[in-house]
Image (cartoon, rainbow, N blue to C red; front, top):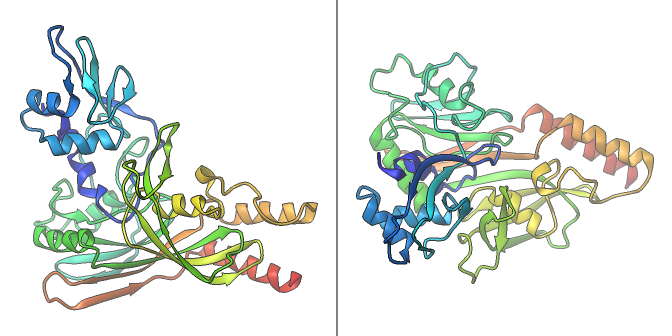
Length: 357
């Protein structure tokens, strides 16, 4: 079996501006080989491309950059030189299991649908695709059920289906392609950055400026594979990432912002906001469940704890989605309301600032 066949599904999504391959951060072994005793030192990308004829060197480099290729139980870059006795493994953030997607009767909020595509408003808490610890009950299982009577749609065919992803605990809009031509067209739009998507987020702190631009590379945190880390834009570490933000409402100790992605990296908004000192409210992975701003009074602490209970997740919603229809060339504009937990939380902060202003 080709070592990197395992990451085909991963590659379909990693250029997506949307963020996230949801999982618990644990890595699972999918492939293992030991370097021969007589092997001369050679770059691992060259070594694997020669020993895995169906895996291009470019694909191997991408897997290494993502932290999926390990040598002697440690992640290595593509310029690592293998030595006799080295144990090379492919480690992915999902177990090695039967990935067959079966239809499941799960409620689905369809915002728009025609013969070529459908737009879905995903609730927070729903995993997009089967992965570690989430082998069923996912969005793609729900889509498979919704389209079960469409003979031309195979949920296990990578040439149709979701064009992009959002995190498990992020709510909002996603587009699904029903045909290979639609997926190709939509995929190109995402890749060429001609789509438009905006997110609403509640973040800690008050901004000095009303809008801004964050440019900083994003890559896996070498100390914590659950998180993404931010690196200087002129470094060779991570991938280039740009986020634009605009203040919508100010609540003194928190701020409601609109974020527009110029690029698309895993956890981009979450990592970038953390980087500039404004973690998303309720984002445990990036420090947003600490009381980062405000008063030291017991009443304020109780208020924040009630806020966390009201919306127990990062407060991030994929609000708008704009793309060109793959068949008729018409611009499609979609917008979605905040989910109930986010509405209630924002209203709570509005009342707080009104009383304490």
